[in-house]
Image (cartoon, rainbow, N blue to C red; front, top):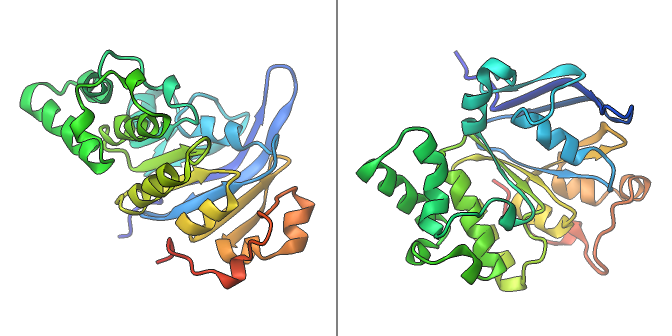
Amino acid sequence: MSSPPVLEVRGLAHVYPDGHQALYGVDLVLGAGERVAVLGPNGAGKTSLVLHLNGVLTPSAGSVTVSGLTVTKPHLQEVRRRVGIVFQDPDDQLFMPSVRDDVAFGPRNLGLRGATLERRVLEALDRVGMAEHADRPPHHLSFGQRRRVAVATVLAMEPELLVLDEPSSNLDPASRRELADIVRGLDVTVLMVTHDLPYALELCPRTVVLSDGIVVADGPTSRILGDRELMAAHRLELPFGFDPERLPVPGAG
């Protein structure tokens, strides 16, 4: 018997209390180990979609299921362990006196203690290349280092789905490459929300385009980025001189 999808979104709609409708029936399925980019103009509904994945927002219609578990109130604690969201600003996630304390915060709330907790923390920091900084205050780190620690705080929970919100924003080229190397090396399903189209091509073999609250395209990233008509219709702009059809795709496979 095959295992359920890591993420299954069916007919997801959301209307905010002020009457604004952000999502109009989104369908999205991610299998284990996939890396999928979500692209779309500002106001497309990307953030609203992400906030449904761990129950911050409740659907007005439709459903979200994570590895067979519906995202509803009785399941929220387990869903929030399974779905790790790394927000755009790492300072939204780092608030403890040391890097070690920040990464330990989630697992400690799950009841881990002692050597088991320490091992979980150091493994997560090692996966993002930050183990040697475990005892430093987060605010003494560079922005790129803080983003990697934010990823570690999520990995320490051993999630099944890692959601990255604009992971390359405000990173210098070296930090951008280092983070890409980390993401490629993770054995976890990844959903990456980004405006950085070359980063989507590098890391995500598959792309979903969200526009005006609906999915308007879902397919291989190189094909979607090469569809000039689709890109123009949904206000997606490639960097000058960038041709997705003429570049290798390191993230594929």
